Image (cartoon, rainbow, N blue to C red):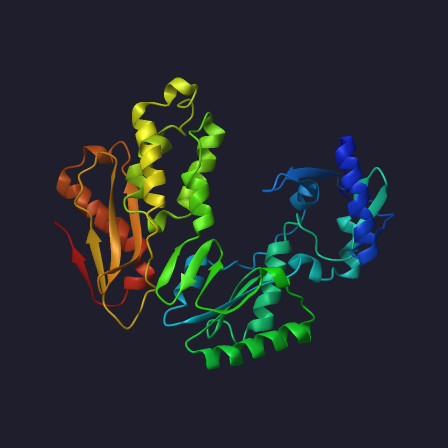
Amino acid sequence: PVSRPMYRLSPLELDKVKRQVTDLLAKGMIRPSTSPYSAPILFVGKKDGTLRMCIDYRGLNATTIKNRYPLPRVDDLLDKLKGSAYFSSIDLQQGYNQIRIDASDILKTAFRTPFGHFEYTVLSFGLTNAPATFQAVMDRMFRPYIDRFVVCYLDDILVYSKTREEHLEHLKLVLEVLRREQMFAKRAKCFWAQPQVEYLGHIVSATGVKMDPRKVAVVRDWPAPQNLQELRKFLGLTNYFRKFIKQYSVLAAPLTNLTRKGAFISLESWTSECQQAFKELKRVVADDITLAFPDHSLPFLVELFSDASIYGSGAVLLQEGRPIAFTSKKFSGAETRYTTGEQELLAVIHALKEWRCYLEGRPFTLKTD
């Protein structure tokens, strides 16, 4: 059995531990334990500046046989929404905690605090198999409706329909499933029969999908990075929305070059070229572009960008003149020495690989300069 020593906690953290343990005991989510397993607790900061108590299950996770049940790709979920005009988003209340743990495995979830030794009776955050287990439960619950009018990513459920009348029928079916399975939603985070809703960091509507304005604001207000860790956080956030950004890899190249080992050793490494790339990335993220949902009954057009660049190349996938997605590739050292024609062929190969799921087995148009 895996057992780790307790971490030292501040007076503020001790107070939060006591309050949370009392609350979890009252709800029946944990119980006193005599398990030979034991994990320490720690705290992480939340977006609002408060602290969240977490269980450090790294020791247990290292010895756990992994459940390889797949989580869906966000792009695949969004692609299902073509033709929909009404949307409802349902966020489950403390999703993981609504799943009971098998009696034989409860002892493995034990954790130690200054106020006693406890174990979870419900699925806990931090367990390596929690996401896979939860996704499998959601897929089983909604299997008759998934990809017809429901998509699920963990505890985030989206119901989509073409008409209001159809949407109300779909909602009735979904809510009946939740009632039958005794899964409870968080009312404040649910939105019903809306022309547009936020889902997984995107805004979806009948016209397509765009970036969540709240995340755009975070990028827009991001200060210039002072170290490598801050730079990686910025690039991680912007990379999530790269399909909305023309020539993302080219624009970000001066910044991604700084992430190489030993490249960002001081603020002197932050050149005027880096500052310009940083400002330009923030500007294009704020452009508020809306991408259309793909329609597999219509032909696709792949258009390469002719903008000459020493850093890389890019392309856009179009239908009826509207962008479906952007893609780009940063050239390696050897690729920067290719001829212009070879670089264009490289861009074609990259675009066809990126969008194979849309283009394979059907005619499409490729446009270059």
